[in-house]
Image (tube, rainbow, N blue to C red; front, side, top):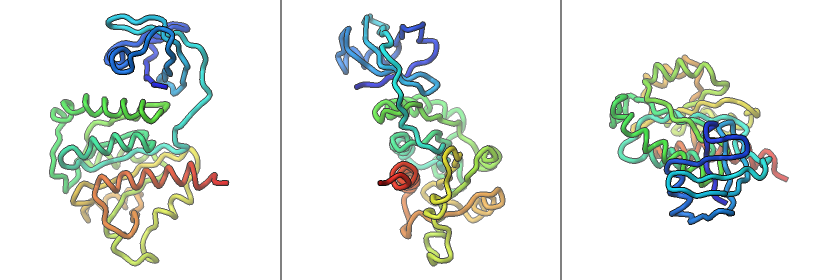
Length: 255
């Protein structure tokens, strides 16, 4: 069943008024008719089973049939700080990262980032990025839409990291070392607790520089390896999220 995200302004008692691009999706893509059922997610993460009662050119009206007792969100909150990558890799990361449960995406200007996004350039991209995140949230039946942060330098990222309980960064030097002398991601996962707030930093194509690694370590970040192989930046981000998802949602509660 198709899912749509709505703001509190779109709810009037038991009536929901869907507007914007979702109207086109409901009427032209899904070809829904009055009487069809959809799921609407509110800003606070609640889900409602709704029946379409009216379809107009710029609005679809629905009535709430029942509230659903469901949540597919990770038991931990994961913010992915991604060093700005080249090309359209960031689009891939936010789409798949949303499917894997990320709560927030933070693009940061790393020392080795080839692409340069100032606020003006990013603002032009943000509309498309947010659309990708919203559509991925609907496709994967998320209860909430991940947040997209503005671009920030490493210094600002470190300042904002004070709000997190677990602070990590993937560092290829850890992957090159002897296993016994490097920081295993698995050991970190074993010590995670429900409701932890995790900030995972992934470097751009060239990785995290030595100077950046030093700054992160001083700020309380732990350098980790993501397996023994050197991963592409887009692979590293998804490896980290998939590992957290598996460990917290499947491995921990197996059997």
